[in-house]
Length: 132
Image 1: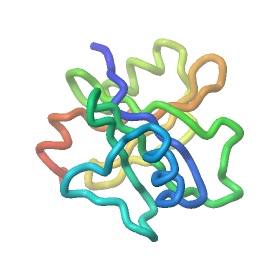
Image 2: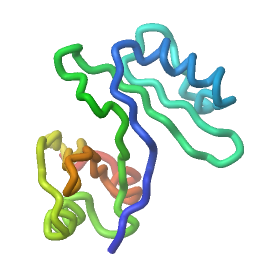
Image 3: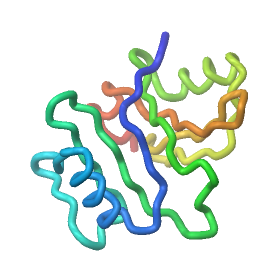
Image 4: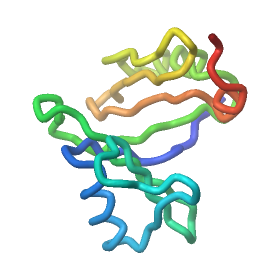
């Protein structure tokens, strides 16, 4: 079992303004049927050529880490929870558990050098929706 990078995440103070800035720089666009608007706390932009996505997500100022860009990965097969177990066995360390009672959410880990990344639910888990 392995993962793939679902998108790159940037922790920020103003998701809309920063996503607009990066759209102008990179030529990325809003995701069809999911426009970014002022006041949105999460704004995703998309490279129309490659499909790469960047998620800008607001966090409180006191939670802005020194390394504000990280990968969000999804299992290629299996489940988020099984992937967390596998990645911990590879030497990652769990730093936060953002799983919800309904099965949604993610887990925050760090690699052996302290770089954060999140493990999301697999595409199949997302397609089947919450479990509660």
